[in-house]
Image (cartoon, rainbow, N blue to C red; front, top):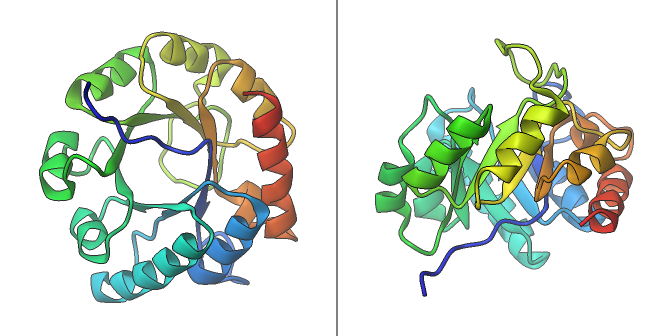
Length: 212
């Protein structure tokens, strides 16, 4: 039987550009305390040496809470610090190449916007597929129109890999996303920009758990 690494259902992506109150480390601590099962560390602007130092500190926080750490894009940093896995976008390093670097026990995810791309991610060897953006979002720039719940459901039906929905997801629509067939959700603003990131995470975790 082939071993397949698993991804948690509630992914919190730390961000220090849509908000400036909390560092990546502080957000990781708050989200982990609130019940996040995965922290994704993402910062496209930070120099790599500084990013690696932050990644080491965030990993220590995740380990203390038995939470997975997924590094966005920077595969060699993920390998060097011992992160649980990486997420590579469609314009980043290929899934197959990330697997060579990270090894068979790492969690490797990639992005898709529809069922065809989700199937391609499956064939490439991704352990999960981040599908979106489901709803309108201001957390990422240069995005097309939202794909909506119907396209999300179609993607979830047409791949055996866990689908992590992303894009504009919050406490008001998370249950609908889960009912559409998503394995889990990834959020940025819903936690990072919340007045109380820990409480926001706990609320989302309760919604996810209630709709598994």
